[in-house]
Length: 140
Image (cartoon, rainbow, N blue to C red; front, side, top):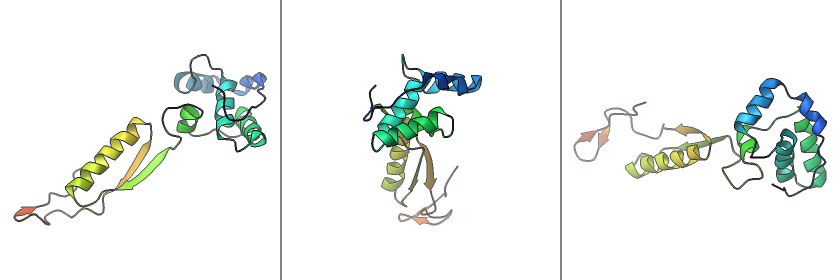
């Protein structure tokens, strides 16, 4: 898949990959018909601000000086998923807030994101809910 900026690919840099590195890229990151250097070029050309920046990114990645996080490698230059590793959000102390957080987390997880949710806004165990109810607290 062509990116926004053209980069010069050096296929000899495949030799810098370990067997474990090749197996990981094969299993998790390569698109059909894509080689290792094609993957690195796809990501670099997509995220580079201009052609020179894209080439530097490609060189750093292909020389094993730097390796982007999983969602960047998996989704960069494609129309799937998001390029973000972790999302932080918080629960509001209402049924709508809790259900909304649940729905948001399901969507984020389906796109490959890691999630950290803050639950400190919810009432503690035994606090009043409605007219006669009491909270059970957060149940892990």
